[in-house]
Image 1 (cartoon, rainbow, N blue to C red):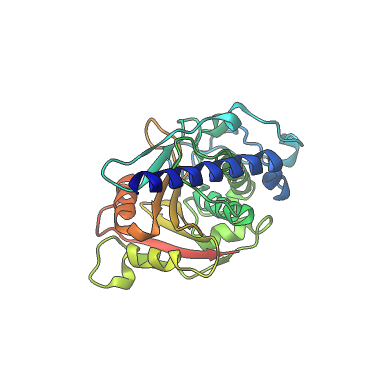
Image 2 (spheres, helix red, strand yellow; image 1 turned 90 degrees about the vertical axis):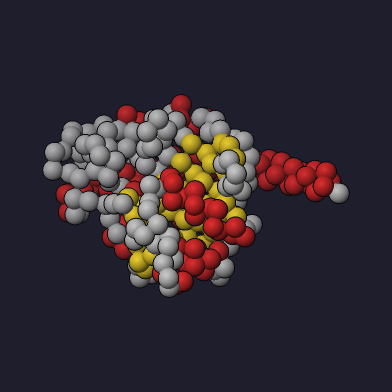
Length: 288
């Protein structure tokens, strides 16, 4: 019986992977194009006054004349992002190479656009109705979407950087910046932490609400330690953390857990985000 269940689970995962790859072949960079943004990342001049949440200098802003009119595929498009099951946990993690993060993609040197990137990525998952399974190789459409979201998010941020506060943006501020290409509604920020005597102010309680949301894909931005990450609750029961910052020898990271075991998922999120049990963060639900 156990072997039969494993066989069924394997078949489901293969069907999911095949369907996603087929969809990726059909759509290509269609999502990126439909955003109607010139989104190639270029290297600009450093600005010593710009705050960077990856602790390095951010690129400068660009005029429209500086940007090529057509996006050209890069080697990063075909990268194989290999994941692994987290030890003694039901979570699964994919770590991108160091050159694929919001602050390093296409040779960039720094970025404070994490909130904008999170909004764009969440919209992409919702728009494409994506699912995610714990497979060794991250599905290509997720890789392409992350690259597109970083390019577009950085581009949007750079265009209006000098009118923005010199820090990461709140969820509402990010929605305002992204409104030229996506329509998003942002809920009031909720102060939550891992450990609290009041259940509604715990991350687990709020993520449970997210997982039981009314939409096939439900999303929330989480700002903690001056960085913004994204939580996604999928129709299949998976819950995902997307962190586009660089992490030492690795770039962006995606963590997959299950709504039925939020505790283990949150413990791994806590490690990734270097978040203490009593550290507060702001959680904002977003809808499209």
